[in-house]
Amino acid sequence: MICAAVAAAATVITLALPLLETDRLQKRMRAVSSEREAIRARERERLGRAGEKATLRQTPKAYMKQVVDQFSLDKWLGTENARVLLSQAGFRGPQAEIAFLFFRLVAPVVGLLGAGVYAFGIWQTEQPLFVKLGVALAGAYAGIKAPELYVKNAITKRQQSMRLAFPDALDLLLICVESGMSLEHAFRKVATEIGNQSVALAEEFTLVTAELSFLPDRRQAFENLSQRTGLEVVKSVCTALVQAERYGTPLGHALRVLAQEGRDERMNAAEKKAAALPPKLTVPMILFFLPVLLIVILTPAVIRVYEWN
Image: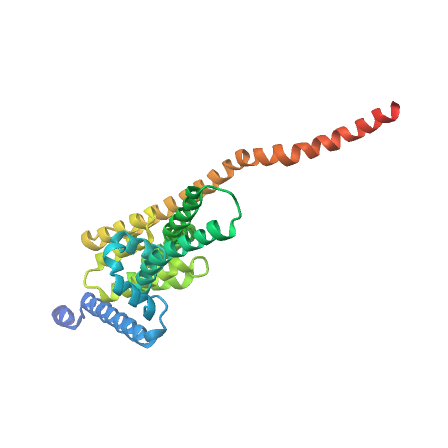
């Protein structure tokens, strides 16, 4: 009787357990989906509260927009390459493009007038007319190149800041991803932590978080990040993220390898600068250190010879 009771209880438990078990996978997937929707809603609410106070995109100034529209500068001065360069320099939105087109028109005129006034009015010299015209044309050429040089200088400084901080950002991103965070959470957390080292990189990660929440194709968000930064190491990371998103490849190992490559590249750059110091110090040593050293060494001997004579 005891054996029959145990067998009957075991049969009932065996048949009832599948009915009582909950689908943990479906519950986890529903939680992830609801969390993604919460992030998307939170991003919309945050950007909606920012309104006109957001600094990434500003309203174009009225007089600049009027000049650009009146002369149709976007047709014969604006190029797609200029838009890419402005985004890499951190200037986004219609205000940046309109200001760039405006200064590309105004700077040559100002340079021509300034150089012309200096050459024909202030510069008191008996130079030929073509020399003065050459000075005026040089001022106009400097005005043409001034906006481009400013943008390229801003790009160089911004990329340098991101290049130094990116290996640490990759380490943080790897930790966040391997701890189970989604990419939106990981980019948001890294943007918060990396802001002390590079404001530009934190800004780019924040934009990626917003684009991952808004864009229907997540691959486009990674490609936009690669285009805005213009760094090879960022392009490699974005390619790994796209492959992981498309094919389901493991992301942790790729991020670890790329982070190590970034640290090696940073160390190689530092060693290259250190190796370039001796040639750079040769000329200052010849001009400044060696004459002083010879004076210190030879002066006592010259004084002693003079006393003997």
